[in-house]
Image (cartoon, rainbow, N blue to C red; front, side, top):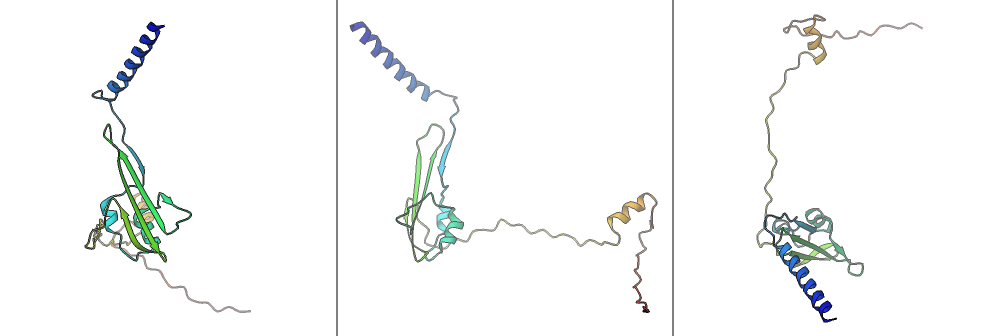
Length: 166
């Protein structure tokens, strides 16, 4: 009986040490796990007092938790675990009064100065095209159908009304 207990305890200790050893093996890929709404400081900096729920929804996305009993509180929770590192969690609660932001509470705070989001749009100047012929006229000109001269513009004669007799 004593040998069975000793063997069982030895087996359980060896299995526990295997799990510790397997968690710290070098060159083993561990995936990143992200859960919840991604929250960063740039998003929080855009929030201002008296913003509507719709504006907050545009900036932050839909809240992770909307309590049925507290409709004026939205909770955003973000959890991230990268590789073998410890889990990092951020939580933000936004409080509303009359559908406008009245308070923000959580791990990140908005900056004191207004932040202008830089535009990522780029402007490109496109030169004006001179369309004397349609694509079909150009292509048919390559094969000898139609007028092949570039300097000729087609003029359309106006339709003259005719007298109708009854």
